[in-house]
Image 1 (cartoon, rainbow, N blue to C red):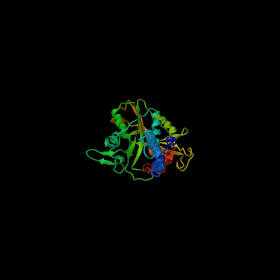
Image 2 (image 1 turned 60 degrees about the vertical axis):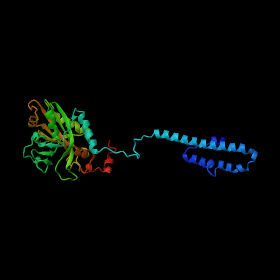
Image 3 (image 1 turned 60 degrees about the horizontal axis):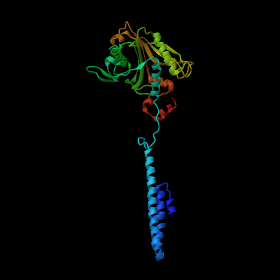
Length: 333
């Protein structure tokens, strides 16, 4: 009996092995009962009583072992987080466009710019007319713009996020200091260098006594934060309907340091954005007194900045979601 009381088991399989050893048809206790017939008559009562006690003790010990294992299983189950997935999932990575966009947000946010957003499906007024586009401007042509309907008014997919600027100027009084990120659409053939949709970040600052020098200093700070403290910029005269004067901004090539290489086509400079002083006609169209307020605006393609930062040669890779491409940026940030 002492041997039965000392029995232990760490699993259901071990409990079963104990049952087979002691209580199965060929087990130790049934074997003793089979030998009971050879016990002398005067000892049968005592021996029979002992055998029944031994069998009862063995059954009770097996039941106790089963109860102990069940309690341990319940305790282990209580520690399991049932909200977790059955199979561990590999961690993803942030998209390179998201990495660059968030860095742009950080830089301009440090200068007091806030984020403004607007609809991707727009009307002609907010995309073109309010921004001083003449009725016959080429950008209105079907070759450049995805029109949804032409009657009673032109409804289209926005071709730039400048429409967010006009919506903000219509509803908010100066001072205004915003950046407008978002997806835009152009009716272009998809290739390694162009796509029918891409992402922009445009900026707008309107207040009293805003000058072109303010614009230049803002963009110089951005370029050095994004591409390194030794980055130089240059502004070349250009034309946009909504700014006057207008300029294209180049940065010194961060690959060759401005000495000239295939990436910058030997010039030492790489174009990254357009900018200029907000045209007075745009201010007036949005209900802002152009005699009291001035402002500057700028716009850049996020894909363009990402190409410069990570040297991605094919624009199509940004929208194909190939995990092999995306995992290259695991260690980028």
